[in-house]
Image 1 (cartoon, rainbow, N blue to C red):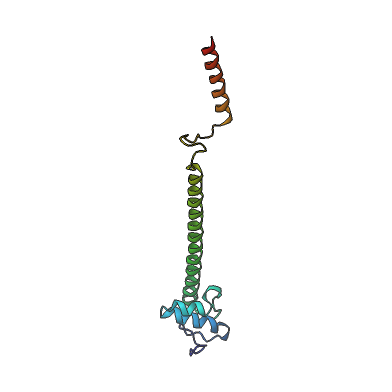
Image 2: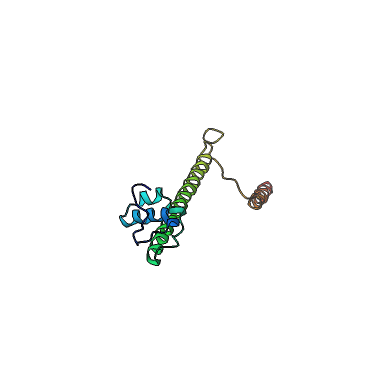
Length: 131
């Protein structure tokens, strides 16, 4: 135990909670880094500590777990948004590709039904011009 006795800040001397007592002492002086290094994220409350002391350790543990989970969700969201932006940029690059023939504008692809309707209209127009 890094220079600490087996006594908890609440006065508990139960040896089963020695590791938790170190965590509680670190939390008492707002040293979250030391509490995490001592095992805050995986600790269970000391069976001999008073309920207020145990509740503070559990609350600190749960708050830190929640914060870490939120950070992971944020990172996943940022990665997802970055991937979508890259996919959009790639689609725009493909859509903005130069036309095949010089001076010819690229034609957007038509859905099959629209292409068929356009073909029928062109055929009718062509037939009307011949008569």
